[in-house]
Length: 190
Length: 166
Image (cartoon, rainbow over all chains, first blue to last red; front, side, top):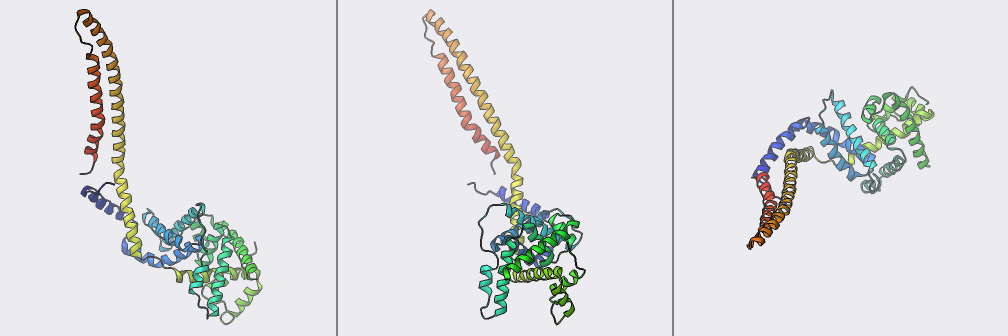
């Protein structure tokens, strides 16, 4: 391995300035944006991948790509949708990649956090586990649609922008996915 | 596709936790009887609850940490990009050295071949004259080979000194 020389360090310093210039926002603006979006994005990634640790990695990657993207955002909502679009693409890439299946979200985590004395907490944990299992029976696109619409509360236009679909097709796709998930949840509850 | 005009109201009530007999008795009764809204309640309530729990459970790294990692990565990428022209130059230099070596080898081969013929002629003439000059061709080829070997050793060394960092 070659030693790092002063010339190389000088180049790195010059590179750092270049790199920071390439980010689409400064650190203060990023902190504000991150604090507002990190948890919802993490929740989305963890539910879509079914792996909390993978969600951590994808979160970092999503924000990096977001920072490096040379895109002008009309509004804060547009900026947030763009971040979710990056997250969706990362999840799609993950689905294409062969990987070791880990425990679904909620199974072990819910067990750790649940207070056995509280029936409500236990029931909520069971519902989350059922939902986790039900979600795995859906297609990735159905999961994305349902989460964005009902967990994240995105409009049809926002969902279309995030998933790269036509706005006119969202209503029908959403209706079908919803009917399917409802049937699976009811079946599991019997 | 079956639609219900009250879907939006039902969804908003779920999102704000108002879909209960106490707060919205009429809407709750509708949601229980309408098949479209019943599906909506089942799915939206489960997903909403799941998201709330996931957000509570989430322990994302701090903004400062994410920013720092992004900066480090951007630096590394910038450094890699800055190094690219040098890598290309090194490739070109390598190709030149390989070409020059091949050319030298060919010249040396031909030269050795030609000198051996000339030396044969000289030997013949010398033999005729009674003098011993048969070692001339071999010595000449040996010199060319030594020169070639020196080039092979010195050329990469010279390249390294030229292109390496200070």
